Image 1 (cartoon, rainbow, N blue to C red):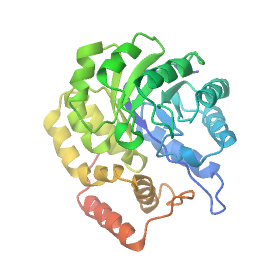
Image 2 (cartoon, rainbow, N blue to C red):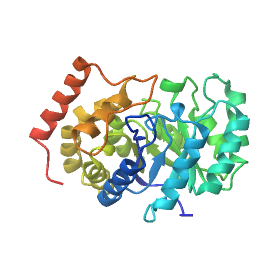
Image 3 (cartoon, one colour):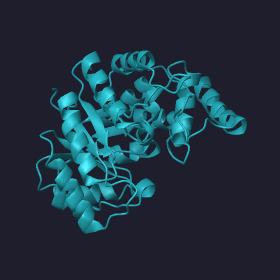
Length: 299
């Protein structure tokens, strides 16, 4: 088990599939080394970008065991908990801890728009099932449940909660959270094309998407902001933005996986019901990539 230092770049890793729709473990290992060599600070698996909703329970645990066994070179392994029932979420937390996870990223209950009372009870009950530290994941845009700054302040009374991935698309949330909890929780950016803004407002980490294809640029952007080299960071961010925009929208998974494939570090294969992009959609992504590569900075 690795102690979780909640800061830096934590890639939200994609799940690689074979042509026969099984997990491609060899491709997963190659991509892990690619990320580690670039200097990422932690790893997030089984998130939205990891297509967790299409994975069987056994596959999720195999994924945790694989990363734990393969070795993350001291980086914390964060497994996402995105289950539909409190019972299933608690059972997965127990099993994933035993399988080698170092911490969790916890979502509100899936497929049920819980009210505030239900959401708070769910989060605390799931936390009670594990001894591991937890990052709260607030993404009301995608999941329809908002964990607002006042709720986060109440949850901060539970020592299990140590960080929050803020993906509300409203950067005003960051100073609001800090007003309520100070530095009690580490705030992570959860939206790629708001990263610079989030760091300027006090976020200390980034659960990133385009890092899957551009890890060095992602780590460099975070490092520049933490060193106070804002002009250099802004210049890099301006170059990166057209690609970072691909992290939002209903087909962000297909878009990022296509970028991985075009960069030779992954596959565009997704698991149904998702389908790969149409020729028109893929062409637009490829055009964005080609324009970025024409002016790619040296990192």
